[in-house]
Length: 139
Image 1 (cartoon, rainbow, N blue to C red):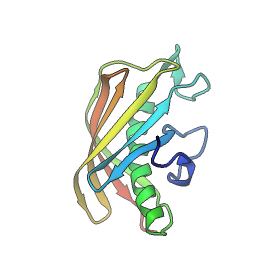
Image 2: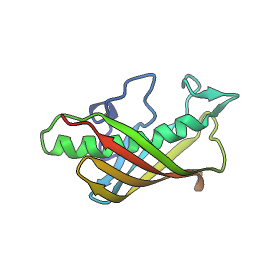
Image 3: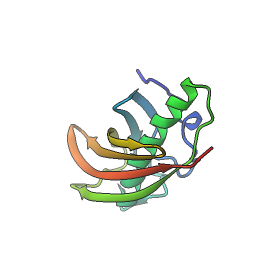
Image 4: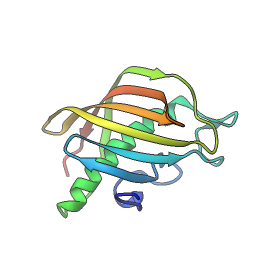
């Protein structure tokens, strides 16, 4: 069961640029989301989800986490920006119909900057991961 099913209430992105579906878990140390790869996704090429979508999926998992925390505190959902992506690893590209399970772990958080470790699994296998720096705009 999802922690929060209406993901659009938690993230600033809007279709067709939404790369997460449900927020499964969220706490002080991280979050997990799910996402089903569909044929009408703007990042589909040759029946596979391309690399930029995987990076965006990790970033939107971060957005869903902060959005959920803000909702709990009755604050507006902020806009965030990817500041850097390091150690990007792509083992394989998911296909249409695959379900991605994405987890982020907070490594460091200072003021409006957060460093996370992101990991995407599909069918029980790790398919991608990276370290990402996210900056939250002042609201």
